[in-house]
Length: 324
Image 1: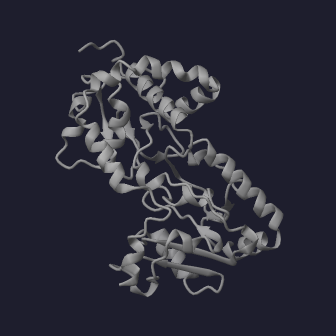
Image 2 (image 1 turned 90 degrees about the vertical axis):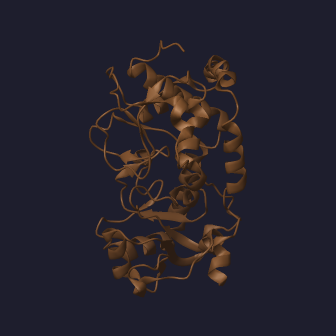
């Protein structure tokens, strides 16, 4: 029973009620209001570092050649008429509403680990390979983009690593098999449908912050807790990421932004002990992580980048001159 109350804790969580209220209201506002504001929004680039803005736009949208979309593409106007509206639809429409509603796009929502055959809007994509058709937007941000103000110093925390997540993937199960009973680890799965021997009691984010190290293992795509861990005074412990989102996980530097462990997890204890003994190096990683995540906290800048990513998408799919 107590664990269920923990799930209802609002501390260190984005406000779901406000998110859904705001987005349902947004459905009924005429898009023409926002279309008239697009040029003004784009002109705000003068208030920022234009080179930095363009670098991020080109990181998310790597389309170089012009591609005409197939008949599978759907109009923006249909986005909020889906029978099962989700955060993906809402987060996409937040920026799509600034463009003419007869413009078309392809959407591949969910934990995407493949590259679509045509240029498509996605939340996640592989880091390596030819990934131009995966155009990343800041999607599912209610869950993924959470930042903390951690009051506890690294030095005051337990010399252990904590981790709670769903474990259905072979690599996460392997990690539990190796370290579930390890004296330096407080880890466990929160799902109860498989591997009952690895079930751990639920923990709030506040309880995670008692530990010097927090496990950030990728799941079906990215590790969803990485953003808030990197804003804390604990160290993110992870293998080198394979997938990325708007957080640009592919640009993270091992042992600079996070503690790198081998893909087979064999050096975990060695890495934890190293940073327990080398506090100054640990504090530097935490400082670097804080500096990295700051770039995602300027709402006006994030909005501008999102709009420019979409503008480039429509240009590269030969739609920039469409008229209603």
